[in-house]
Image 1: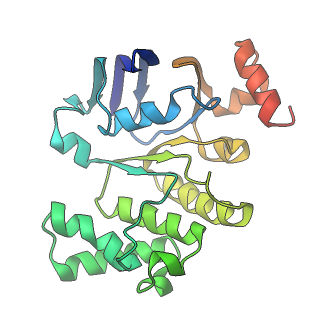
Image 2: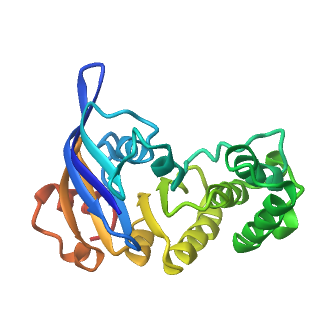
Length: 238
């Protein structure tokens, strides 16, 4: 589904991504881990076509993500900061993109939005504005908004980093449900228990490079790369 070939990117002459190559199959659930500043979020934004790359290729079903509006339309992204429109209710936030981009009628957009609100367990909050919602509820609305565009691939950039533990659990449960339903997902997270629970594969990045790409079932015994072992010891009880 997604092919990343020798991708590089720099900011102000500083290398952020160093010849990244990665393949994602349809239906896979991939988690990207690594220390802050390792290039995880930048890579995700490049996958979504939100950042230009300096060299290499990112192909979605053989279409160049940076040159194909169709490819970008099939890739959804959920950000760590929610980014909801504060002047719109929950349901209007979800309806906006289908109406503007896909020219979906009001009735169809509203029906789909209510189904999505039910899917993220917030149907009763349809008319609430972001300031009336908890952080966890706002993030679930953001997930529903991304799903409203009917993406085939959904990217999550540290979706719980701004949440307290109780709100984190409710958001992670929604993401697990999506993954178990067969949605292809790529998730940047520091939640290691969640990473093992939801993923087929775990990618470890450091300093702009992929150092490990392994089945999640092998993570606890990962000793191939000493930097991964060091990282795991720092953030878990290994």
